[in-house]
Length: 113
Length: 111
Image (cartoon, rainbow over all chains, first blue to last red; front, side, top):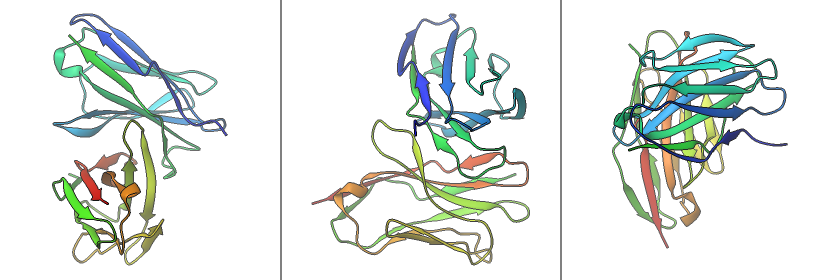
């Protein structure tokens, strides 16, 4: 079966711009969560969506937002980009929220210049 | 709050050596514990898990035992291969269902 698909794989943006990242979960998975991975901070949880509702949120500023559609696909948006937002953004899906069988995508590498 | 601490890398070993990557955690209650592996250019893959004290997770020759008395979940493998070179993440999920990762340990296996 197809895995978790994240698009685009690479992205370069300028400070102050906004960006939207996309995640298509495994078919049948209804929970999608997002993570930021940087060399300094490691992997940090951004938020989790289940059935179009945000169920959990990490400690990130309001510039980071997301949503989930009725087909379980999810988007993450970052507004007013800062240099420190440069990171690998990973998406993971699971059958249900709190399910420990997370499957991760390969990520979107965002570079802010 | 909840946290995961794992040994700093990189860890460099020769093929067929014994591997231990230490992981300790701080959490209230009884979290579930995980090891994930990230190969170059890829996302994370679940390697093994344990959901209660004294459980042993195992997969692909890797093992880890949930030790509540020492709040540890150390990853071990008896004989590593070059293909095991990757970054390994220890993680926990507690009652709030948020997953907390350690910083990751990069493992290099020399042929």
